[in-house]
Image 1 (cartoon, each protein chain N blue to C red):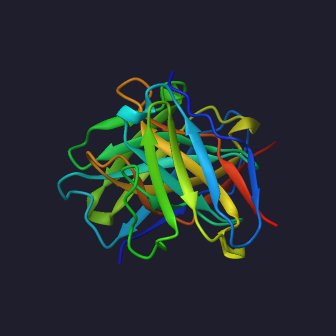
Image 2 (image 1 turned 45 degrees about the vertical axis):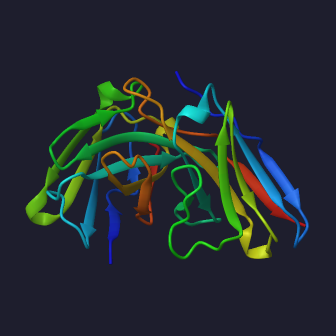
Length: 108
Length: 120
């Protein structure tokens, strides 16, 4: 089965840059999508197709994908960015849609 | 505006069957490429994809749960129904439905979620 590996937590101070790696075998050949889930709320897509931003998502959110790691980057982190972040891919006809384990962002 | 809303029992007993309904608005379940998926989240745990139904009636199920899951839809009522048999306390969690477009493979928007507790 296809697995996506995410670190459990990331901590940054306001104004700094937060990076969220998502590791998977040859993930660079797949489209990666990222979701933000704030406490007690449903997930919201913040990046789709590796680096596209839906309307309403700040330009501070960006994504990249190459080799075995995709990365979500949040620049100039704000307190309101505190949430869990999940990566997700279509892993093929056997595994279908797969989520990573999620990374919790703490804004110090 | 596209919205989805889950409904169903808050509490089910072990071994019982869970039936959840996703009622959508702002789009048609029969539109080309349209799909509705179910994703669940155990308390404090990660998201887990469960099942997906496209407008052409193509269905996909999580391989490890396939024997317990069934999807159906009622386009006239804009509803997608998920049934899960033989419920276990480990199935406790929040169940979300979300829209997906065939070929895009990402989920959005999502419903608010329905918390289901499995306990005797």
